[in-house]
Length: 106
Ligand code: F3S
Ligand code: F3S
Image (cartoon, rainbow, N blue to C red; front, side, top):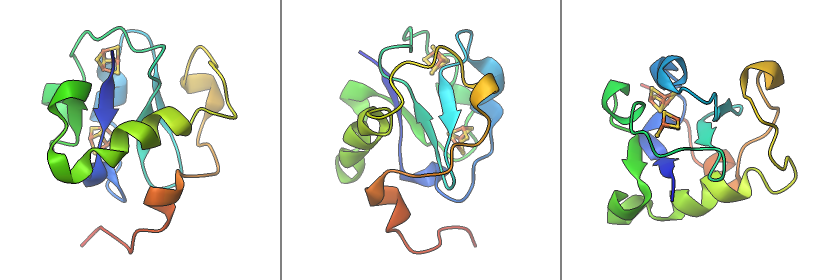
């Protein structure tokens, strides 16, 4: 099981969650962050600190954002398990469902 970052993160990228994650498994793409589904230890520390409530336990993702489970998983298809986000910096891509969204920030 894993936590999932959903649409409210897109173009916001507050990054408060990154500071809380004990295993450094929240990776930064161009427009959103993504939780590695195999590296996440389900501690729940990230979820309450997101100011836009973008983070959900996978069973609790609101219906309109259920695709974001797939987005967080598929983001890592070509990356495998890097074992730490800090050394990766900003990864120069987004999952297609995020890349195709119109600008979200006000
Ligand atoms: Fe995004 Fe919220 Fe983290 S906006 S970067 S999920 S704190
Ligand atoms: Fe990390 Fe725990 Fe969230 S392992 S991604 S802070 S649930």
